[in-house]
Length: 130
Image (tube, rainbow, N blue to C red; front, side, top):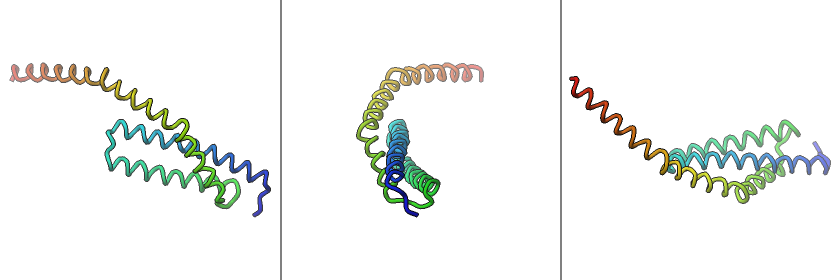
């Protein structure tokens, strides 16, 4: 099936937009890795899920609109994902990393100390009862 140049251009730009969104999804996986301290198995699972999701979106996008998988749609999606990574992605992930370290330092560590003391007092109460 032959597409006109105008339709191909629109599909390419739409695929760039979809690729940008898929780059944002990958950034969510990157943030999950920051929270989990870069566990290798989690990295593998996230990359596998993202790859399957990327190809599923590409397949659905191409076959839903044109009935065939088009190379320019793949190129557009990859271009959009790279553009997101270069422009917005690195900034967001870096900011999230700083925010997460702040939350760990200012909120979770004091909370951990409080909970540890509380559990110690409850444990000593049960020891006295027994």
